Length: 125
Image 1 (cartoon, rainbow, N blue to C red):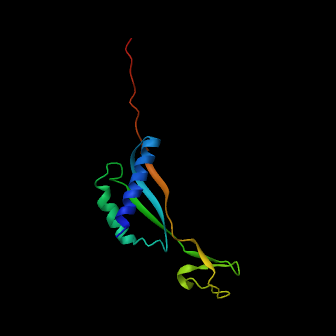
Image 2 (cartoon, helix red, strand yellow):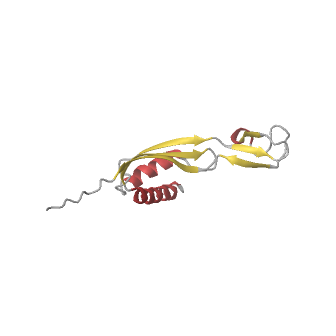
Image 3 (cartoon, rainbow, N blue to C red):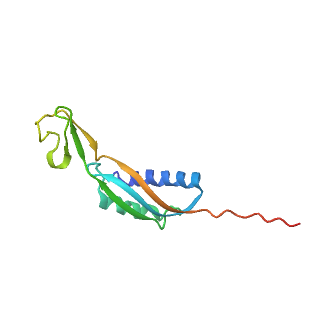
């Protein structure tokens, strides 16, 4: 199960973003997950729910998943087609000279967060 290592990497990235942007809490994270990325979304959600209890930054964060459709390009006829439906063989010219264009990604698309409240320094005169 590689989902936990991906969740760990996402959480580390969120921690870095929070530090750079002075974020206190993350309310939600939207991830785009490729249709053929190999990520089992049910396992991923379980891992997210387990891991977020250990990280105060994301402990209340909602996880939103969006699927990126897998699309393959044929180098011979220059057509794109649905990868899951047709596989590696181009449905137009039956060529095997194809490659995956999209559908293998895992991308942090959006973060809803709360900025850290800066402590105001008061001076007495």
